[in-house]
Image (cartoon, rainbow, N blue to C red; front, side, top):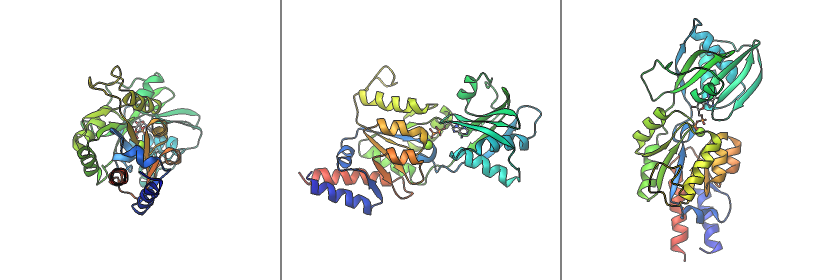
Length: 299
Ligand code: ADP
Ligand code: MG
């Protein structure tokens, strides 16, 4: 396409609510083979709610929630906001705390009233030497679980549920219709990822993936590395990544094309080549179609 065509394409992009950063971006779009979606805040709305508060010791559910909200008060992750909201609804004041620490894509930690409180996913707690196995009393495998430990002892867990974006299904279907391989990646547990993938017709799922591993996954897809990818058919690919979190930034940078959305964390917005300015996930299809129009019509 001519430079003029690209300018026109970028301009039309702006009209359609796409922020396209740079003249070579649209050209990359039409070369794509695969698009990798983050789950939380990308395929889902990113406004989860706390559905269960389950103590595993003698403590009350209120105490559990109060601890959880207190350690989360240092962050703005979607799970943190949900937990803070739940505590507020029950009129539970935050406890006195300091030394807040966030491990992106894994959990949070703080000193609360002199005790070390840890809240995060199963893997992360296990790594800190906390026994978590066999403690999930819930039957709904589509819920996200976070575990809370105080001074090295598991105290309980919280379950949270998020909803799919209303246009997630249509977005995935349209991308697949355009010949793109659609892949789901998340730091959440496998059963939650599978439940969502199944609803959306996504067959390739990577769960419990840490931020740096999200970037490695993109790299393996790009190189067609069959050692790490489950499929035997692994050609090299041009890969787009779409995500919203701090934990997605390394993958957004590694991808041939990074896409982020309104409401995403600043570092994700900065790293992305395309930002969807509205709240419609479906705008990602607009970007593909715009690129096709720009690069096929004018030759
Ligand atoms: P996704 O990759 O789907 O966007 P994240 O990488 O943000 O999800 O989080 C992955 C998992 O890490 C969550 O499901 C949760 O178990 C844990 N986690 C991440 N951030 C937090 C937090 N602030 N508080 C508790 N757990 C967290
Ligand atoms: Mg996310």
